[in-house]
Length: 148
Image (tube, rainbow, N blue to C red; front, side, top):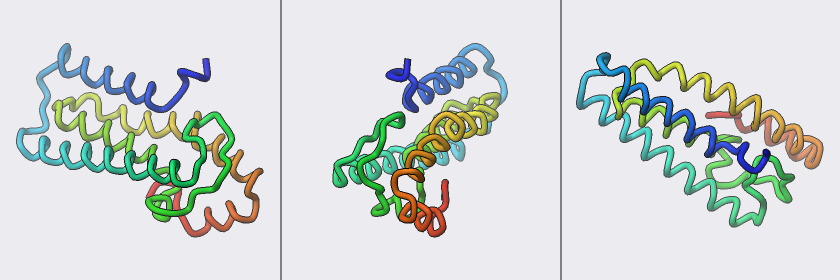
């Protein structure tokens, strides 16, 4: 079951819910061009964060799988600004597509998605990193925020 319990599957499920809302419960809208523009910026920013994050994982030769133990603590690139840029990218993608699809009723999915990412992935990952990299991770936590 852990092979499918990964953030991209959760993101796909939440995107499917938002898309279904636009198809089956249309009516409420954000109001046009500004939502498309802001949605595009969020979507583009999310994709960029994912690419930059995955590049750091490749450079440091460690796993990106959230249920496996990391061999290195990444503190470079986008990880200087956020301890979780991949999850932040996922949130931006979800937000961007909700805006672009005009899925007003799906906006509550964003904080629910954040909560699930923290409980299912971020907290367990940070616990593993805390145990493995002790002092180094404690210093990293002091200087780098979880999200932004």
